[in-house]
Amino acid sequence: RYGMTETGMNTSNPYEGERRPGTVGFPLPGVEVRVMSDEGELLAAGEVGGLQVRGPNVFRGYWRMPEKSAEEFVQGNWFKTGDVAMIDAEGYVHLVGRAKDLIISGGFNVYPKEIEELVDDMPEVLESAIVGVPHPDFGEAGVAVVVLRQGHFIDEADLLARLKDRLANYKVPKRVFFVEDLPRNTMGKV
Image (cartoon, rainbow, N blue to C red; front, side, top):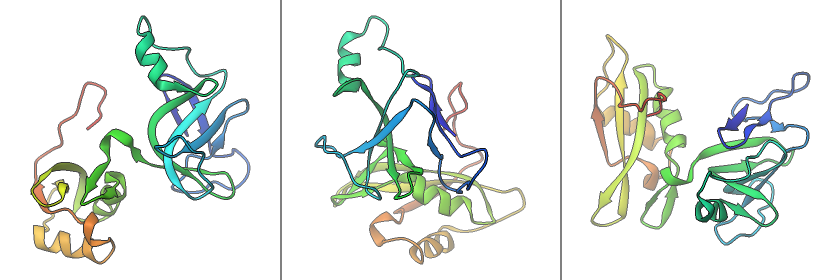
């Protein structure tokens, strides 16, 4: 399932039918979704870009903020969600991450969620966050902040070696910091 405060629910895996892990399903009845490039071009199935949604579930705009509303609504009431996504050939929506979380390292797009999922799958890891930090050569680089499971251990070199086996070099974090817990806002988001 996928929804947000401004839209309510947008998509869901089918109640009856194939549920695909790693997807948020199909648009709900009356809801339309599309993926757009940064230049405003509609992207084909399988391409990654900005997710937009339109339907009766979408709010009309931000209260007393007409400028912000004008920025977020485009071409016939399509709302720019701020999420980065891909719609596959069968119409399943795959969330890749948040546009504001995107790390541009050496001209390459790095989506923290992709790396976090790999780190979080390690048996020693409870949870992680990948954040962008300034880098003198690449402009920005990813850094991993990791919380280990109680009684488990992995060092920085081992964690990075495991990631190097599964990621392009530009996606591998440049450093790993181990912490007791990740900071969260009042909504529980990291």
